[in-house]
Length: 292
Image (cartoon, rainbow, N blue to C red; front, side):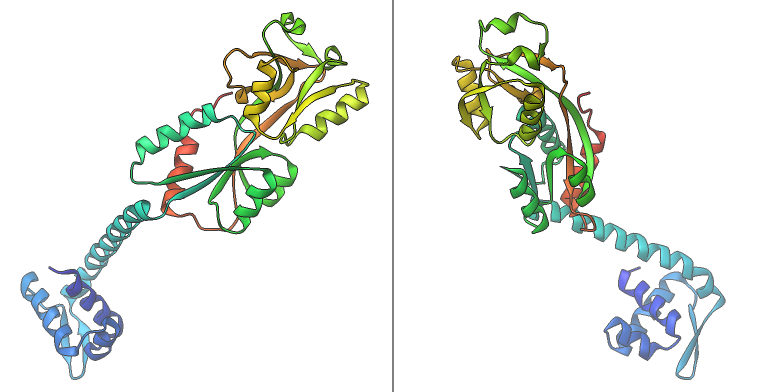
């Protein structure tokens, strides 16, 4: 029993004419007739009764038709599955990550994903919020990991991953590092390192102004590694998301009064079909144990 023979039978059963069925199958009428006769010989009974130029399904053919349809459907499904598996190796997954998102916890997840899907090529690129949103809209990224807010939720499909507090980061020996938690008022007049790339920077600055907290920026940078290095060197303190602190030796304390937190999530364009690699990635995201 060959798949082509089953296709011939199903086409003939649909139009009840071998000539039209052959046209639908893109073969000659003698080839279609030969294939159907070969299948009938294998099954041991006629599937059709010939009536002039037309044909009618035999009682045996009527009973076999659902089974032949199921065989063809399963074969098509298996073929699609095999095609999608091959596509995993040809179409890389393009993931953007906001530059302020800590890489340690994310790297653990990505390493586990690659170990479970060795055929998927993963391309990760870092950028600012505006850049990542532009690349998502332009189709240069399949998904991105960003800080979620109302504007993002209104424009993109969002899957929250985890929440994280903002902490105050000090160099060893800083006088405020003896506190278990740091209020914003404790920091007034203290030199600090300004994280220019922080998407929540304007909000924090507005709170400082409203609370009458004066901050003296001794160093400014858009790079997270430079910010942490300068804090460790004793230039001043910095506000940072707790999972973004990676430099050994830094001391961090929770920021209180007010507390500041953010929601980190995976976003993608609404209505855009997933590649097989992206489908596998979304399943991995749903099954991962994210912090908090």
